[in-house]
Image 1 (cartoon, each protein chain N blue to C red):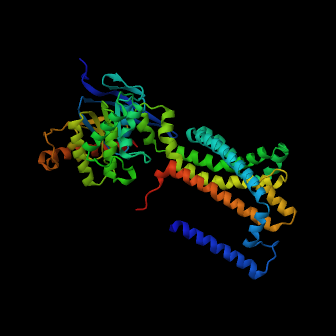
Image 2 (tube, rainbow over the protein chains, first blue to last red; image 1 turned 30 degrees about the vertical axis):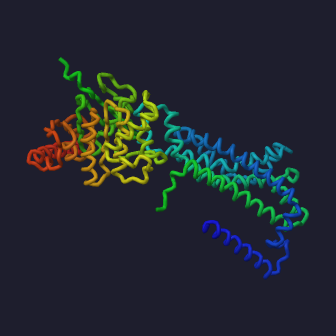
Image 3 (tube, each protein chain N blue to C red; image 1 turned 120 degrees about the horizontal axis):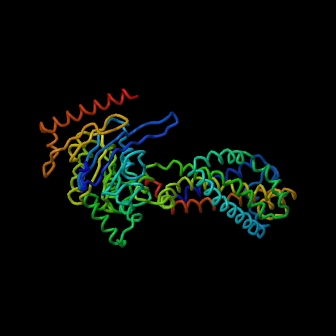
Length: 251
Length: 267
């Protein structure tokens, strides 16, 4: 019970302080909207919130899914072959170093009007890097004795991967996935904000800006936070199921 | 007449092995000859870094010798084979598996006719033999170092290998736990006869567990000294403190010193 009540109280206190801050400073809602402005703003556009929220969510999840596939694949290549790691790593670092906000207009022009594809692409590009790095590190730091135990019995490379390398890498993989979830949301919104006809919460945020509906913008932020929290905890649950062994019991 | 008797299970014949490093060639084993008879147990001792671990890799087929041959049960070794069981200083248990599932791991890889119930019974039987009854469903992280090493020994033996290779399996344990595990080894040998080779740094361990002790010279290693250890039927720790044992230990220590000096000079 405590682990539900304590965070709940914290959130309530946070909202009260936020409300007070706006009230004491007598800020207008275009400077900062208060929590009490947000609910009406949400209620006014509730249908759009659910429709666009769904767009944002599925695009993020698909982008993330592709990021997992590509990240794991690249990680495996780099984890198993030193030569390929030396070849791919600098490219990967260079690609990751490019701020994705600058890639957004390029992608938007490249696939004009294909809002789903554009958004998924950016979500993917921004989030695959930590996955690839963590998988490659997990695989390349596998103690040689683990391999020898199976190899001395005549096990094939793929059997060693499935029995030992993959499960042993899972804790690192999930750690990276938690980072990737947040990144993927950033990617989705970067693209949605610049494509006003592209639906999604980012587009709703943009329409709030053009129509000077500031409480709406804040309501979108809250909605994004809720989606992000939800997806994050989905990853936490998956981690508990597949890599729960890595967690030491506290007693 | 051959120098090597047919019944010898492990035969190492004129084996030479050299590593290629960035600074050049590093010869680790040079013209090594030794053998372990069926159901015999031989300890290999030698100075640190003299190539003992390389030897275990050559016997298990993980490495191929540059020159010479290794035979297991009369067959020349060219690749790893399922008739070998290995245990290292690091017990390398898979943390996501329970102890019994760890012990059963080789049975998932080595071809066998056991059904899942028989596999479980086999693993349970070994675990109770080493005193791990009741720990089957625990995770490795819940066990002490000595218990993990016991489980690791069970895993090495579960598929009834012809040859057991132990690479300093007790090296990281405290002295009393180590002595407990020596007794476990004697129990295992009695109940599950195997042909074994034990790499160790502990001379007391070598004469307490093995029938024969081979001292390797400094790198590149070859056989420098060889001694048979007389054994009583029921080995007791006290037997290590008889004057006979102490003389044996002294002579082994002397040999190690010679090997160390030689390795120093070869540097």
